[in-house]
Image (cartoon, rainbow, N blue to C red; front, side):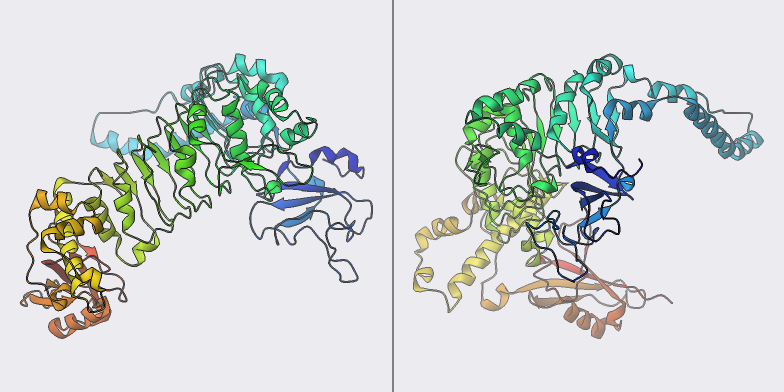
Length: 610
């Protein structure tokens, strides 16, 4: 595209997504720039999606050294620091309509015929040596056939059920091509448009051309709601009537759609909104019966901190009045929803989740990883069908979460790694507590739970409860109320503080403990064996070690006993019943952190090479 000085020729490009030198950005400004050598030269002001890709925040420094401020003639737009740049129009790569992209992607023209020939030749040369070896040792020969036929079949659009055009240059769907799309691609069920140039939710109009669509992926496209905002600004107070008219064209767009992926689709130009524009669109699509069969919804990385919505996108005073849809209302809008993924969003208040999604009748899978939840609690009659729950990399820091999760009536699969709790105790110990406290759990942290593992975890949990209880009542700092326990109702008191105690005591009997003292509560009996070839015949050490001893101190003990320097030691822990040992890799961590149990083995291996 040649450089054009007339600004009007580019004004309709505002808000479009472009690519320049491998980076994606949004056009925020079109026009002259004060620091340009040519006063009438046209520039694009770009807000890059990648941090630190740009040079400024939408303002420029003039020759007198003053940074131009907002609302002046020379602050052109506002964006985060180091995410803004000015580029010449010819450098911007714009998108095309979807039909042309698909045709280019799957066309079989001369260049593809040449590709087939070259690739077949490559295969022939690559396999020639192996063919010769086989011929020398036997009378058998083989030949690769059918490659060109396979390629041609894959490019027949009329039979394709899946079309993947991710990381291409689709910017919109030309509505005049909808009939052609219907005729040429009648069987498409999966359409993947991740990381294209889509920039407006108005593009949804065109998807009605894919009448058999079951799965749609629009992730990593910066979609704005300017189309809706402009129309609602002219509603003259008739907001609901205007919304109904706006979404009427979408009614038949997704009659069979079951899976909708909208991860990272909030446009940077709408970052100042107090709500998620992606959630606003999805809610209204469902409200006006556009998603009648939806089973799976993904809304990751969309700056969702709540699910409240504005009554009107356009407010004259600039402040949106928000309302919170009830869980009963959401259940009516999404009656078939089974999987909801809201990971990587800054949600911190758990009560938002049951208040919004707790009544979804078929929801079995809830993924909330990389959020900010510090506690989870059960609300009566909410999430009754939930079976799978992911809370990886949240702010969980208490074992009490497992008591609450045990109250969910059907929860069986749990992912709870990389939380602050794992800094206090090991991931293995967290797994043991999860198994013991959650009676219905069958999969923890992506690993199945065996009957033996559950038995070991529950018995260990019983002993831990008894030790904790004895510790609480032998502690001189404990209050009189904590110390005052009647022997007849001691188990009732324990049950109040430690869930499942009575149930597990009935199942496995009274835990066998030695007479508890402060000393043996904080110690563990272990066997230390040397696996170093020079000392492997040495007698194993039987030790009562304090749980507070660090791995580094334990290595010093091994050095004195087995004559191997600490820098060459690799200690492994194997609790009774464990199939594989665990590496004690952090010299600063204690044995308590690694979840060591009575009767455990510590194996000292040598990393020294002769």
